[in-house]
Image 1 (cartoon, one colour):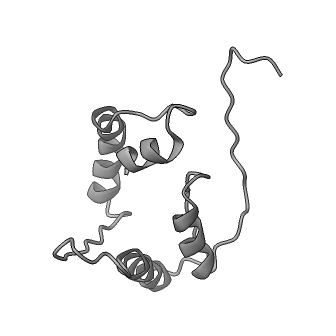
Image 2 (tube, one colour; image 1 turned 90 degrees about the vertical axis):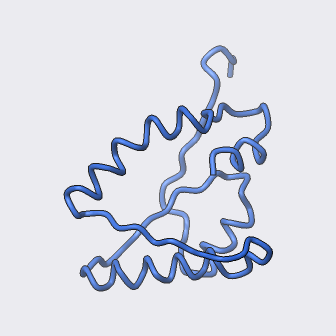
Length: 108
């Protein structure tokens, strides 16, 4: 996913290397799975036709959250990832909080 984000934003915004992103996130993933607050959904396929995989994973996530009694869920998305935004909106997500980014050395 990190590589996909890098492709979307190019050199305009900083994106971690896949190794650095994994180093930072791995500890949190292990904690979630160890304390049993997290879960993993896996999609399998031949890689030739990805149509519907994202929707299926999100619907599986929705079902598990509903089973756990969760009333709302949120998702983060890179602003340039318009295809993902369209998918999330089709599934009922709406903007709630907007994160903005600016380089420190750029004057306003």
